[in-house]
Every structure is written in C-alpha cells, then in structure tokens.
Amino acid sequence: MSRSIFGEENDLIRQRRKNFEAICALGFDPYPHKFARTHTITEIVRTYGHYAGAKPPEELDRVNAELRPIAVRIAGRMMTTRLMGRAAFAHLSDGEERLQIYIRSNEVSEREWQLYNHLDLGDFIGVEGYLFVTRTGELTVHVERLHFLAKAFLPLPEKWHGLQDIETRYRQRYLDLIANRASREVFVRRAQIIREIRRFFDERGYIEVETPMLTPLATGAAARPFITHHNALDIDLYARIAPELYLKRLIVGGFEKVYELNRNFRNEGLSTKHNPEFTMLEFYEAYSDYHDLMELTEELITHVVRTVRGSLVIEYGDHRIDFTRPWRRLTVKEAILQYWPDTTLAPAPEDLEASERLPELLQAVGGRYDPRWSPGQMLGKLFEYVAEEKLIQPTFILGYPTELSPLAKQSEEDPNIVHRFELYIGGLEIANAFCELNDPVEQYRRFEHQMRLRERGDEEAMVMDEDFIRALGYGMPPTAGEGIGIDRLVMLLTNQRSIRDVILFPHMRPER
Image 1 (cartoon, rainbow, N blue to C red):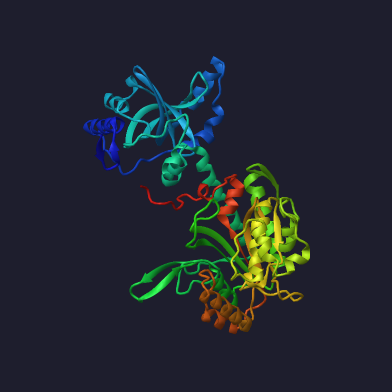
Image 2: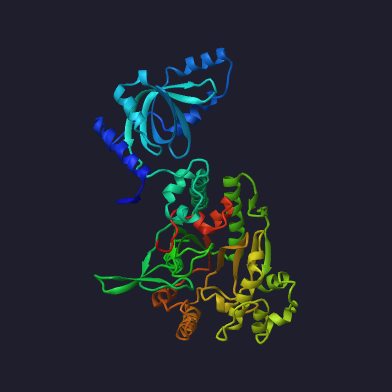
C-alpha cells in the first residue's frame, strides 16, 4: 500500500484518482470557480415535493405536463448511483435534502455521458434539466446537461450504517455531517436556539456587546486560565475565563441592560460536560435582583424550549423533563438532605451547620476531602456529590455559602450565604446568577481572601483586579447578572448526552 497526501492509499483511492485523470482528459475543468444555480435542492424539494407520490397513469401524465416547463439548474454531492445500461439514476444532496436525477446517454453529449461513467460517490456535480415524477412517485430531474464540479478522492462511509465510530465523528466532523443527517440537525437546532436567545434579549431592550477575549488578568470566575504572550507589549495575556468584570464595568458606564454571547476558555479537564472552549451567555440588568433573574430565566428558557421543540415537555435520555412554570426552588442544604443516598445514614439539618461533621459526611458519600477547604467549600462539594446529578426537573438552587461566591452580595439576614442561584436541569448545571457585589471595600476584601487562597495553592482562586475596584469606586447601581451555558442547554434540547455532540469541533487528544 503506497502513501498519498491523504495517508495510506488503497485500491479505492487509486481508482478514484484514475477516474479524476480520465475526467480531466475529457476536457472538464477539474475545479471550476462557480456554478450558477436556479434553485438549491432543498428549495426544489420544498417547492415541488407535493407533486411526488405514486399516481394513476393519467394523473401522472397531467402532473408531468405541469412540471415539464420548469427548467432547473442544481448542484450537489452525489450520494447514490444506479447505472442501467445507457441510463442511470442518482441522488444529489445539498447537505439538507436529497433529490433524484435521471440521465440517458442519448439525451446528453457523449462527453457528458463519459463523465458520468467516471463519477464516484461523493463527487460534486451540477445538472441542468426539467422536473418530472417517476412511475414510482419520486420527484426527479431529467438531465439535459451535466457539469463536473469537484472530485471526492476519499470514499464516503458505508451508506447503510453511516459513520458509527465516535472518535472519527468528532475528529472529522465534516465526514459526520455528510454521513449522519441527525448530526446536522443538532447544529441547525443549535443555531436556532442562539437566534431565539438573541431575539429574546433584543426585544427586551438589552444591548449586545463584545468584551476582550485576551485579558491582562484571569478574572471573572474561579478557573485555571490559558496563558499566551503578546510580543509587542512583552506581557502575558490570558484567554478569558469569563466576561463578568468587563460587563459590570459597562453597567458602571451607564449601560443598564447588556448581554454577550461568546466563548470562554478554561484550562481544565475534558468530560461529557466540559470542553476547554465553550459558549456562554452572560447578561446583566441594573436595578434588579436575583429573584427578577429567576423569573426572566424561566421566561427565556420556556420560550426557547417551546419555539425549538414545540412543547414544554421533552425527552432527555431516560427522563421526561417538564419546563412548565413555576420551577422548583431548594437551598443547597435542602437538596443535600432530600437526595442523601439510602446507603448511608442521613445527616440531621444541624449536622450541615457543624464544620467538624462535614469531613466525615463527605467521606461517607465517597467524596474527596481536602483539609484546606473551608466549611462553605465542603458544603459545596457535598452538594455536588449528593444532589447535582439527581436534579432532573428544572430546579433553582439557593443559599450558597459566601466563600463560594466572591463576586456576589451577602444575604441581609445571614452573611454566611449570598443572594445567588444556580439552575439545574437534567442533572446539568445550566445557569449561575447572583446579586452583584457593588461595595468596592467589600469587593477588595473578597479579592484579598482569594489571593490568600492562591498563596495556599488554590490555582483556581481569583486574582486582584484593581481596575475593577476603581470602576466600582465610581458607583455601580444595584445589579443582578447571570451566565447560561449554551452548550449544555443545546445538549438538553437536542437530547445529546455529551458536550462533544453539540460542539462542531470539540477538543481531542492528538491522533497517534
């Protein structure tokens, strides 16, 4: 087996290369610059598809008499071919729909007929002709001219089973999209979800903004950043982990409602729920609190679900999720007590208040324990181990410890917790929101605490952002802000169990 620019070359690839050489020898431009179409294949199927279907001979003659004057010029990838002596049928695809073509040797030039005989599945061709319906009821283009547009040197996956190998589907998404219509539909729905989100906020007076993707400080969330270097300035920059502090600067500057739909980057592990590069929606509204955002979040997501899925009840894996409002609300401690596993003795409510009990409770459920953790951090970990994956129906989780929320306002009644919620659906964290801390003195103190955590080895703790403190010094009105993970929302609304199935080109380990 010899090698080519595509890697190892086998008999199939060699035959395709010979067919390409034969097509060039016939005088066809191997890579034409353009092909003008009268319709896309999808447009023809949607406009004239109602003519299809088996019919009595007289009705078929009448239908074809109506279709005969409709001249079409279409192009697509050849997905099937059936040669029958001096005639042939094939199907062309524009990625969304397929349409049959029919070609006869005595109705095209000899050169074009020879071209057809050197085509391979996957090749791009253009045809000119007219529409008709076959005796079996299939809408078809009767070909009068045939054009060569591009050669597929590599064979497509076997047509009956599509592309089944998960690794190949992720690494070669182009091949996945060719072979698996369901994959294409996921990303079409993803685009629809994002359009609806933008429409929702635009109609409510929010302004879409763009904030830096490369920042001098890794701030806005607790996460490990990606680091790069700017040669001209001779400084390190960080791929942003969250746009939060920039968006709050805009609130200070007088934008009362802002949102951003963009990428965040976190130098962390890969899983079915995590990709180092992911899409987030963040929005902030002055003069509102986190209760307002719970209402807005219910309104936003139910609108998107109803528009995209046509119902407020959807299937996700083995679950039926009902988005009917209002959604359930639990505190962190209530969720731990409600979902405590039957295999161990459940704690009493007061046990969750006792810092000395938290390490043994973590160990009782098989959780990792770090003696450097504060009581709030241990409570957060306990919630992750016990409750998170069991929150299938839409649920707002409240009552987060202050230590876990360095940018959020504390409760007036209990300074140990903050005015914050996280939204869980299908066992996934979908959103995180809180009343934004706008006291510069308290924010400075919280940053100092985060810096001490960094000194003790916590690489995800935040760094001091003195310019943000300065911005708060000019005054920021009461504000609530929220982040929603778009990839996870798309997972829910397309019934996908891995984040890699909703990201066109997910990150992978290098090929061996």
